[in-house]
Picture (cartoon, rainbow, N blue to C red):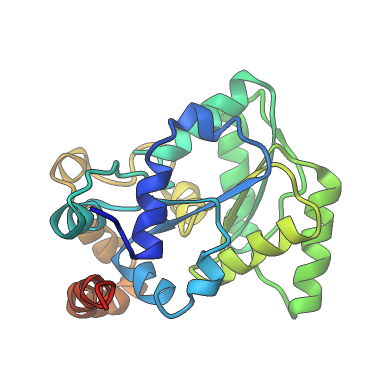
Length: 242
């Protein structure tokens, strides 16, 4: 069956590559979709379309693709239960340069201190907070990232803004491999390496419930997604036939 939804089609296409292949293909950028970010993506397809790959972030999004499109894809989230340790281990083994642009500076400093102790062969370069005064300020930051020439670029600013910055970096010459990461850096700084989610919640794939408990600011958007995502996801599927 042909998948006409461009967003879902790109998620399925990304599944064809192993993580090791993804970590070796220079000049590519990737982002993630879950029920919350999907609602933004369908309204901003021009922002998400240029990405080379999109990962299914969360078991609910994986289940929705299986139910409506009959394709089984992997859950690949940028956290320590999924993609993040794979990337950091790869970079650590190969003495790669990694740039992180995310969160507030004081939170980023804590995260980088922990990461540098756990992955001591990585060269952390060009790292800075994810707040900008203007588009011009963002452009200057993107050019500085390019000057640092990192192998991997990790960007966490929230949906839309992080995609915009990563695309801007590529437009001004970044030729490494880039990923958005959402709230990963904040979670890592506050909770450490591998213990953000209780193990039983990992096994049951209900991490979003724990995040709502730990991070009150996520509750409204998760509740909104619970109401709107099923309708919008089904609507896009039906509209693809016309």
